[in-house]
Image 1: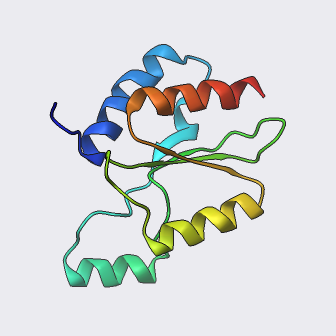
Image 2: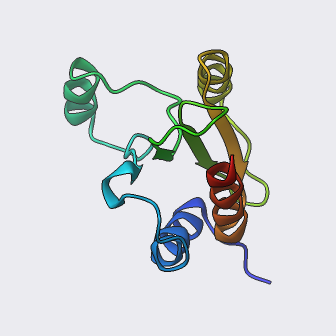
Image 3: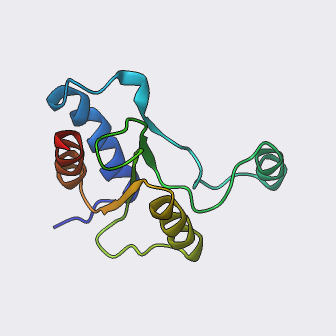
Length: 118
């Protein structure tokens, strides 16, 4: 079995999620392009503009009865969170957001469905 990369998982997720969960306002579910390699000059510019390490891949900026928002971090089968990602998770949860790690598109869709039920 070929292991999916995080990019593959996230791409599959966005291809499917809006087809199967219609009640999400389109602009409130989005990717934060934080983790890709950039030239040093571009990276410096982005840091000055407010980019920070550890921010998760996807945000559902829609509150439910229990949380302010849902953060989704995609990881490959063997992928692990960085120190910065763990720090972000702790801060986000303390601030009242839900944070999940998903290793495939189906798990992420299931997490969103559960989140929307509450």
